[in-house]
Image (cartoon, rainbow, N blue to C red; front, side):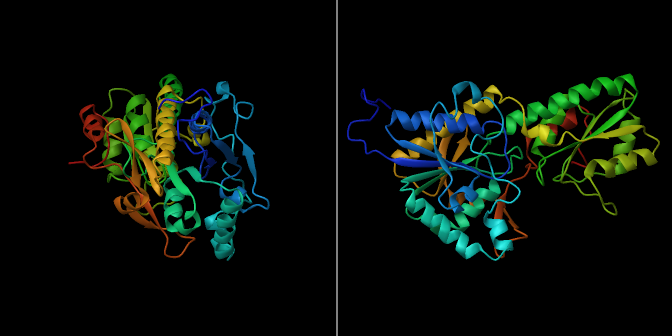
Length: 372
């Protein structure tokens, strides 16, 4: 795009756009926010940041801030988290509003806030739950252009090859395992590391291979504890890392995923310890690849506004960003019922049985489960 000296394209209409981040935080959000802000300013648009996600829209008056380089300087865009925040313990969102019987009032208030702010467009940066909720409650956004950008460390969003935050989370988890590997070797010990990812095993699979794990257990692949034990006993080393996705289940057992596997190893006489990197996976300076993805997705979102698109999600396909309809996003995912909102379905994506990383892990001697 080429702009004249004051930043506006010839014939361009000045717009007023809002940006909000919602759901769990991750690295790359600040990069996306800054790129949206700078790209919008080049177009001569006003940009408002909405604080605390939908809770900020529900507030009276709406909790917003004008985005500029003082609010978010470029040197801070590498930092994890969101300068706009993603909500707090008492925040009102679609699920908490439903739980409190306030959903109808909540929806009406969000629509009124968007109207009062005189927004032409809203860029919502969220995970699969946030995007599914946006589509389910799309009437709220009927008077604005709604553009969604996918972010999540879980990589459980359909129709996109990558999400903002995933690569940094893989790097964080890999480094965590790297450090544990050294103490594992020193003490002739195995470490069972529990990754995040909810019901999707992408984070565990990618970081496990990168860290040289001896076994990786994910929800999508059935596994057998006896086979795992035998694999560890046959290992050429008496130490190593076993990466376990938090979403796995073990028949007849309950508790945290890593603890369940640890008990099975203990019963077989294999010395081990559990380790929980927890929210460090969401943190860390944003990797270059996530910064590039956030930049490309921000640019695509702004172009979508210029093209008068609405109810769309930015997606990475064959290495290039494009937009897909939110309807297609919902249809492409596996529908999972929301426990707090009746009749709501969330569109989930999982590790595909054809994922080449599964074959690579198997060929490299990693126990990945009972794959054929």
